[in-house]
Image 1 (cartoon, rainbow, N blue to C red):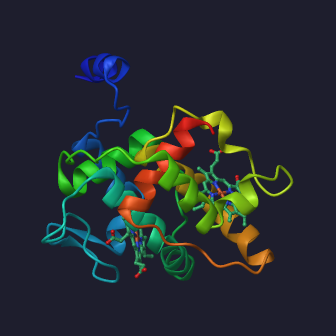
Image 2: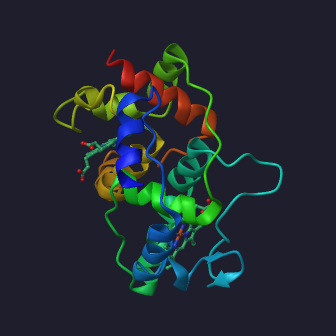
Length: 190
Ligand code: HEC
Ligand code: HEC
């Protein structure tokens, strides 16, 4: 199975990694997500149940934009509960979301020029276009998908948040559409 995934990822136009729900289920317990969240009725009740919502399609952009939009409150809750925030790869992020909601539906490709507007409106440009404030994202062109953005959030999000606070800026939420456009723009390398 792993081999097949590797082959199809290399030949497919869409590089979103395919999640392994069983691996995601193990991560969910090992990383103690289950102390706060439930999946299909099993787990904690301190935080929202995870998985597809009625009336909403379950796609990588839906999942990761929701994580992006809620993550600062989650970090606060983790700090209070003494749970350390994990660093997760794109594959592990895909595994977790596969556990929450099965194989996701595909996302419509984003629009590069819309993405440039989102990049500016959501303040990304104010840091990432200046090497003194943040790493250049240009080197990631062509390699970005929703789950690498999720992984970037797990790995670098707190550094981003402290930089925002020191510049008197607030954390920006993203809708699924905005995330899709951003991904298209960042992949274009413009
Ligand atoms: C200490 C409690 C706590 C732990 C542990 C925790 N979370 Fe959360 N999480 C929260 C809270 C609280 C929110 C909602 C924040 C808000 O209301 O904006 C949240 C939000 C989320 C969301 C977005 C909400 C949604 O409905 O889509 C996702 C996805 C998520 N968490 C995944 C995880 C994963 C994966 C783990 C384990 C690696 C984890 N959480 C561990 C408290 C926690
Ligand atoms: C206040 C400054 C600031 C803003 C605004 C900001 N970032 Fe960042 N970003 C950073 C910093 C600093 C890092 C590196 C943090 C670290 O490694 O601890 C980072 C890291 C990242 C990474 C991981 C990069 C890598 O090397 O893998 C991604 C992806 C990213 N940001 C995307 C965004 C997007 C998308 C936006 C807009 C929605 C945004 N950032 C807004 C400062 C910012």
